[in-house]
Image (cartoon, rainbow, N blue to C red; front, side, top):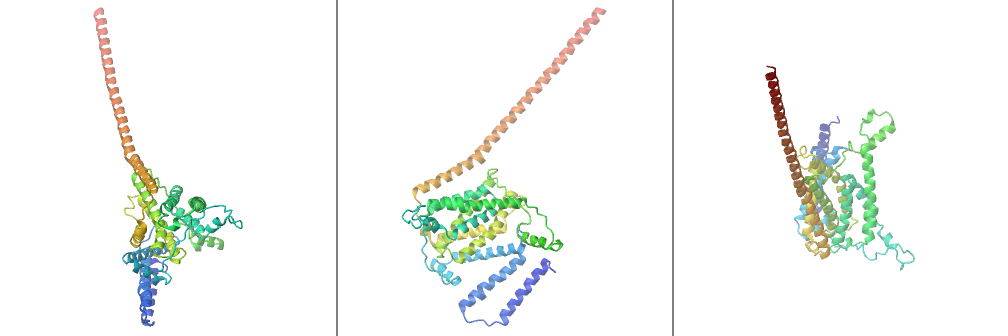
Amino acid sequence: FFSPMAHTLTVLFILTCALVYVTLLEETPHDTAYNTKRYGIVASILVFLCFGVTQAKDGPFTRPHPAYWRFWLCVSVVYELFLIFILFQTVHDGRQFMKYIDPKLGVPLPERDYGGNCLIYDPGHPADPFHNIWDKMDGFVPAHFLGWYIKTLMIRDWWMCMIISVMFEFLEYSLEHQLPNFSECWWDHWIMDVLVCNGLGIYCGMKTLGWLSMKPYQWQGLWNIPTYKGKIKRIAFQFTPYSWVKFEWRPASNLRRWLAVLGIIFMFLLAELNTFYLKFVLWMPPEHYLVLLRLIFFVNVGGVAMREIYDFMDDPKFYKKLGQQAWIVATITVTEFLIVVKYDPNTIMLPIPFFITQCWTLGIVLIFFWTLWRFFVRDITLRYKETCRRRQEGSSEQDRVPGHADGSNLATSGRSKLNGSMDTVRHRKS
């Protein structure tokens, strides 16, 4: 009864009953905006989600249930379609359309400046000289920690996480002339963000990864467990992975993996920047629930996307194409950036200070020449040395072959001399 076929039929029956009820028993109100939002948009999305949850292809994750991940795949498609709709509106119409979601939106909001007074100890406020630190202790501090804890579970590599964390702080330094809330104190960048919030989140994430890699994955049916304690433990473990795959990125092993790791870092940084720029161009306050929903969305789809990217990179013979969730997440990230470019090109095109341009140019040139040396010049040099070594081995073997021939000649001449001496002995005897 609980087979997949039964589930699909059950969802189909419930969906049909709901549509029949709304069509025959509910009176349609004479409110165009209400009908558009409820009967037009929301009902269409729900029908699509029902179809996707029951019929979409399963991804790499199976816990807590494959339908859970199919649901988020369908949400990804709906979100991408929403972004495409916003992208093809005018700037004014797109911002005013957000009022259909929340009437409080569509109004310009000032960005908060996190810079200003950067004194850790401010003697000018004897009542609370550390007030600058306490002012920074808002809800974003635990959000930073939790965000990097989850990102570590996605990436499963300490070095990549630290590189992304540090590079984003450099991006904030580089773009603070565009967005005021990128302007933070030096200790807010490097102590509170990189070391405390991000660093602690990465550390806890790596400890969790170590526990997951050491955990035995031997599953037993719930009804086969005799004790209630064992049943509760089994239910809790239902929300852990079914099996574990350790990510070994090895970016320097070949050019394909190196480019893949660079692409992952670039897309992560772009998605992080989109969080701030989307709020800026669509006039959404940082504490709005849509910002939180977007973060929750990326938490659920990011892990699946990273697993699909790793499988595609690590075993291209078996995984011949990029996974569906990774494909749609990459499309969403690019579409968000295009919305930012269209809605506020003046902010994006503000000239970057010359010394910042020099630093980024130097970094890009170093990466380019290191790539050229590591995967082209070094490989050609190693191949040339290997070819020379094989030639030397071949020539030494050829040198040994004439030596054997001389030895045989010597043996032949020795036998000739011996035969000559035997002939002499016979002549003397005769």
